[in-house]
Amino acid sequence: MKYNIVEIIEKKIYNKKLKAIDKKIDFILTVEVCDANPNGDPLAGNMPRTDSDGYGVISDVAIKRKIRNRMQDLGENIFVQSSERASDGFVSLQQRFENRFPDKNILPKDIEIQANAEWLDVRSFGQVFTFYGKAIGVRGPVSISMAKSLSPVVVSTMQITKSVNGQTPKKEQGKSSDTMGSKCTVDYGVYVIKGSVNCYFSEKTGFNLEDLELLKKSLLTLFENDASTARPEGSMRVKELFWFTHGNKLGNLPSWKIFDMLKWNNLEYCQYDIHLEPEKLKEVQSKGVVVEIIKG
Figure 1: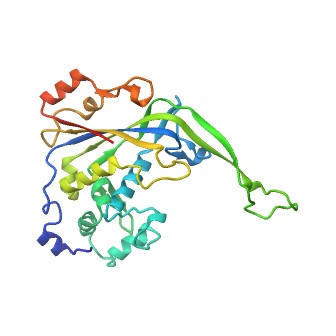
Figure 2: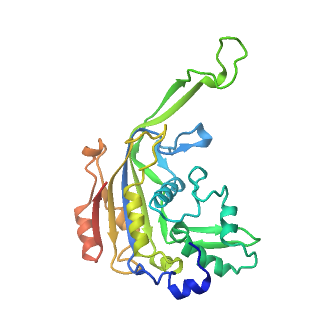
Figure 3: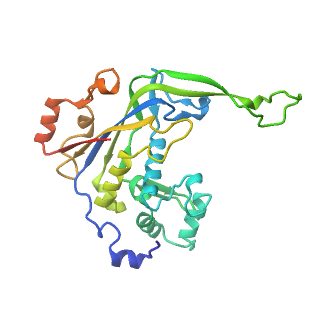
């Protein structure tokens, strides 16, 4: 649905239609990985990403991609759609942008206002528009860090073959080189995703309480409708979402103190005993932070 500036102001779509966020949010999401490749590194033969110490890593870009996919599945308009999931027929961001803004003389501020009203991912994560010779930056309220496993992961490599040639072999009854390949997976790992929602930036983009609920729902169903050879159905499991609601816009205490509460043991997930440290939890709650623990 498209709106002009007058309609946006009159209908109060831009942050006024629904209640604005007036309390800072922090969240921690735990994900269990079993025999899957949570995020392949294209510069390392698509092997699962790991850091120099062997801890598994999922990039923040990959996490946001999955959140966008879930938001799209929930019926929301998304600007940065993946090519295979494009619902509007456009094959590039430029096509999508120019279809929405055909007037090349449109003011940057008007683009920012209308883009925030039109696309949920823009008013959530922000976006840089570099079209029509303009560079327009929108800073979104939702920030997400890269995920890291709680302990070093074991990466297994399996050699695989195809029963049919992809290309015609040089020798009769022979096999072409494309029948051989490999598949890399993480045997087991528990990854932690951390994020926050900034109230001040949400006021600028129009990210409201309804959008916040959509974000929460997207996190809880992060790997639904995402099955592939690298991530078979059931191999990526959202286990728990720790949701912290502060008592004001600025926050009752820094986010790092929230994230430092997470404790665990290095065993299988059911034996990891992942929990919030009781003493720190009491301190946080005493400062007015509302804590929710939601099972995946």
